[in-house]
Image (cartoon, rainbow, N blue to C red; front, side):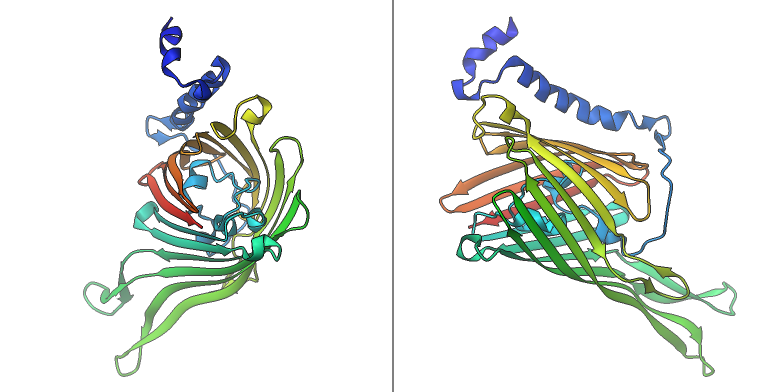
Length: 361
């Protein structure tokens, strides 16, 4: 009865069959409950993840873009066609239709760690020479109080504060080898600076300091295949290929990660106009170097190419819960604009918020 009264209020082009409205409502209903199912009397129910190896430069594993983070970072097979592909699968920017695309992002991570990032892509001559891109990710770990052992009453001496930082700058390229298959890659300069610390007192009582910073070159690769069946795509990526690094005595490697993914607009299976309604579902299977395999699952509903609602989850996860997000996009002539926000629940730590804007022209 309620539906019959409400239905005439909806424009004809926006009407969906009842089962599709039900599916959308179910996604919105399940998203927070996927998070709630992890919560017990003392917070999240811990999921045991087997640690397989030790890695460093972990900031390279963080999902910075709010749109994709809200979808559980299931980004490998999404046909992004934007510069954001450099942060996930470089091949997915190969068919970018705009000449330029710019994205700026910020994330307030756990423990007051702040991420800032930007990507830029350029598609000359309509992409016949491929798409070129640049990515930058900078991390501020905050301010810490430094001390050193000393032969005094307290047993230590204050040496002031220090602020660790990290930086990754990448140059990428992608090209469509056919209307169905594309490849891409990126080379990155990666640096982590933990600061300059006094390590001992000299004979004259002066402090002897040592720099603790490391840098390396890392590589990302990716492919994407459009099956030709509706919007179904398959893709694979390998990120953070690099040599081992060493600070003192132990060697460690960057977080090498392999992913395969699948994505599709499920409403392609219906007669719905894709300019009115889209329901994108994406799934990634991830094999990181340091932990067990994981699944990234995400969904995005887009209304009239303007409003987007998103939800995602990563399984298994010991502290990270469900992600939710919203986005607004609009074109003003030849200029496209998008604003995105994502929220991710965390156990023990503060919840994470991400913001981002995109411009294309």
